[in-house]
Structure formats: C-alpha cells, structure tokens
Length: 96
Image 1 (cartoon, helix red, strand yellow):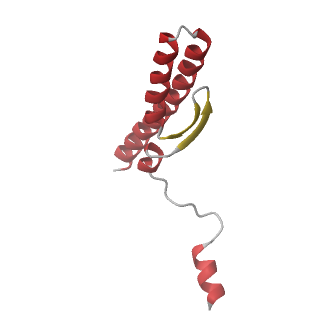
Image 2 (cartoon, one colour):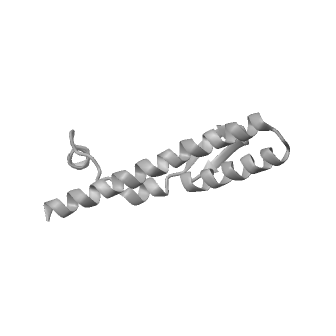
Image 3 (cartoon, helix red, strand yellow):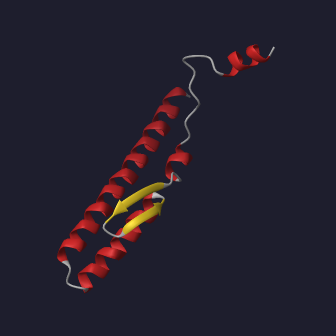
C-alpha cells in the first residue's frame, strides 16, 4: 500500500506547477564587494546602489563600479522575472 501511494505522487514526467509569486519572492545569496548579502532581487539592487553611493562618497571608484555591476545583475534578474510573468499572462489570455 505504501508503495502505491509513493508511485501515485511521484510519477515520472510530472512537474509541479510553477508560480510567478515564488520567483518574485525568491531569496538570493550574493557574495559581492559589499560582503555576503541575502534577500530578494529588488532588495539586493537597493542595497548595492546604497553601497555604490557610499563608495562614491569615499572616492573609491573601483568599489563603486563593482557595486553598480552587481546592482545591474540583479536588475536584469528582476526584468527577466517581469518578462516571464507577462508571457504567462499573454499565454493565459490566449488559452481562454
């Protein structure tokens, strides 16, 4: 009986439905010029921009540029999530 239950829930080829909300709220771990950071992509962009401004105030151009590059990386992740969400909405509208 236990084997039947196991096979029922774990059939090959089945995938769990993905949810865009889980992508938006996904927690990233980043080891960048500002040290180890953890948070959503949006939070990491904000944090790296803050550190870039602080580095600029210290006249540390290298650290500022590094923080800006990390911020751009997480901004691209956010844009990818947004584009995927829009594509799913368009697909759902076509299916209706």
